[in-house]
Length: 93
Image 1 (cartoon, helix red, strand yellow):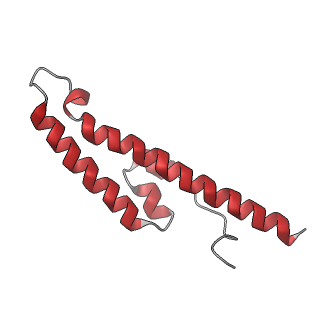
Image 2 (cartoon, one colour):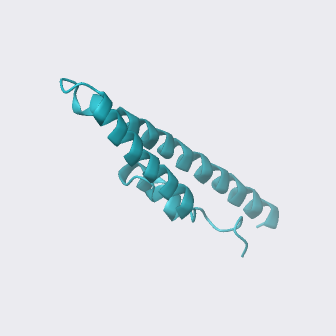
């Protein structure tokens, strides 16, 4: 069974655990890249924002990359799903 024929994993883990969806899809390097930039930009925005800013305001850089990570994991999961579905339909009943 080829990569395209396997049923892709669900990406809910990406919303719960940062970079988890990428690891579940078999792209751990991409997940670690997102995790690295979440930490770096979260740290940078925490040091740039004033102390009166809320928690989300102080960590907006990391939260932004987290959101992009979830969208990216969903996109790749959707591509794998459609590829799997097409391969399954071409095989016939």
